[in-house]
Amino acid sequence: MKVSDVMTVNPVCVKVPGTREDLFELIRKTNLTSFPVIKGETNELIGIVTETDIVNKPSETQLALLMTKNPITVAPKDLIANVVKILSENNFRQLPVVKVKKVAGMITIGDIIAKVIALASSDKTINEYMTSNVLCLWQETPLSVSQRIMEFAGSEAAMIFDDKANMIGIVTMIDFVKFFDSTNSEKRSEMTAGEGKEGSWDAVSTIIIHTKDLTLPNVPVKEIMTKDVITTFSKATISDVAKKMHRMELYQMPVVNAKGEFVGLIRDFDLLKAYVEMSE
Image (cartoon, rainbow, N blue to C red; front, side, top):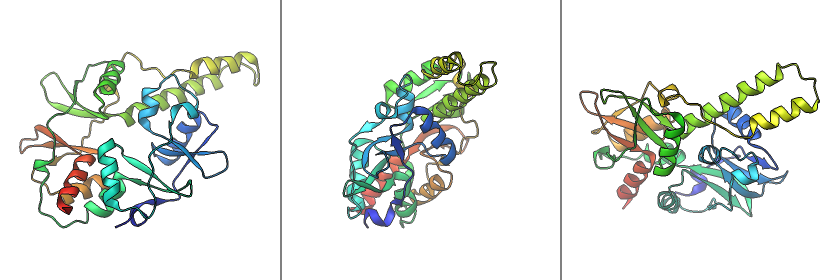
């Protein structure tokens, strides 16, 4: 199977020059969190920007400095097996598909899960692929501390536990991006409703000052976590979990035992590993 059989054609792209606010607007419109970056009115790829870039660079407002320049790319004719290897080795969740330096599409782990792994015929269960090495946070951990812990741990998700060590939620980088966007939008609304006259220097300078940095308030991580956590069981098959993960648009799912107790996590990267072994 080739990239052209699985990739998303005509992907939503973001253009430079552009700002973080342009990116937030695109996220609101599309509900996507990663985009190829193209130059001006051309379709020439010059970078890629994801939710991790936004969260880890809270003081950067210019898209050209937020994005990752010269990303690894694949071609429509490349084999899926090669793409899986690149994604796995680099911990990438998506790759731009390029033809003659221009964006032809995007291929993501989600595409591979939905169009390849979910359709694979296998009785293999997730038990041997799930991980118990999971980043966990206490529900009262401040947002800013939670974000830094996740950044240093290189983790895109963390399980949230209460005072009795019960799993009560999950937080991901996407939750931080949505929180940043919501907070930023509230500030814009407050300033728009102010008494400054349109075009006045006071109004413009206030906007510049207030939207430069994305900051996290001193509130606990439980305020932004996802509470209704979708779970699976360790004896679920690879294909069934792939179907569920695709249907619910998830990157990972907590694994619970018969008592509903948290025992591990199955990630999209784990499903890739399973696919590689099934293909050998």
